[in-house]
Image (cartoon, rainbow, N blue to C red; front, side):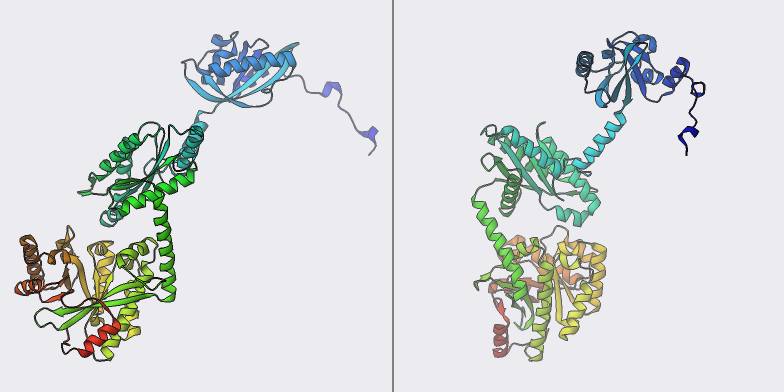
Length: 579
């Protein structure tokens, strides 16, 4: 196209300049607050949005310095920026927005975003400021920050904020030995039983109450954080040993007090581990780990106490870690074995059953006591695998005794809450019985009260399904729980086992004699059989017989022994009687 053909607009076709009336109208229509000041900082224009935001009428601000609308610190900086711009022609705020504090007519401060531009009018240098109240945005940001750094259930700080605070505290203390900082790791004792007995909703209420009680023991500068399900951590600074002792004792006492849980009272308690800086180090993650180690030491010493970290605890943790590793390996290479304790009729001394008891040989071939490795196995999540192995091996061993014509009685296997947490437990029992060719009547499952109440509807349903297979159900350690009688009404148990703690002092203890007699009468009235465990003397056996107890087990009859010894004893014995 020919350049000459391009028509250029004439001067008469250009838009007319915007009138001052239209400029004023645009100024007033703006949503943002717009303020125009001169080179001396005096206000020359103030739109309607600005009057709403600051609370001043236009007549109250015209001719006055812009500093009246800003917090003291920001007003001073603004004056400096203005003077620098007029002297050097440069200013960092021109064309760049920033956050400042606005000052309302009522004296209240609020956050606002301010952007500043410059222009000339009739030869004069003017500045226009566009202001926006960002209070709502700041509140939203603070809320989001709170959600990101706090536990929604308890309102405590979460692990992220705890770590941030601990790192900041350690940086502030520098290399100074005093005042020291401390980390307290708090684990609620028996909290799992609260969830099991009362439900998770009530468990949440107990957690919230526990956190409020802990907060009441702390001072303003301390930080309480929830770092796990029932685990809390505290940063204390400054933290003298005396103040640590005072706070830890307060926490123990506060958490030992009963907590209302519906119509009943929940009891939890706490175990607390403590690490200190700089004595135990200056790394935040390390201090938390050491406090955690000390907490486990406090728990192993009997719970309901607090313990300071010592280097010797490292060796114990190392041994536990080694033991856990060996446990996992033992499941794969078959270093577990079962011993059996025979059960007898108290009157004829005929064998009427046997109880399977797990044993473990470590890598050196030494037997490790169950009370040493079973808690660790539970902590490592190995109990489901161990429980499945025990069930299958006990059933296979019992089938072998039947095939050899040595014994045709039930084998008792202990089960825990972890079995009922498996929805396929009944199916597993059914399959094991089928694979071993063992009738249901030759299997007895023993459970504690705690296993029974883990999930009452689910447990009852599973128990009825097991009884339909012919399996015998026993309530182990009967008499040690606070509500055992109610369980007898709710669950279809066939047998009670009187705990050895009641048997050991018989017949001399009148209290234990009375309790044992009462248990036997209750069981008889409900049509349930009773077996006494821990029978070790003739006097105990005679007392039980006189009071109507028909079954027993204990060292007086036989100690637990491996299957080959059981076979040898039964082969040589003439006292073989079916149940």
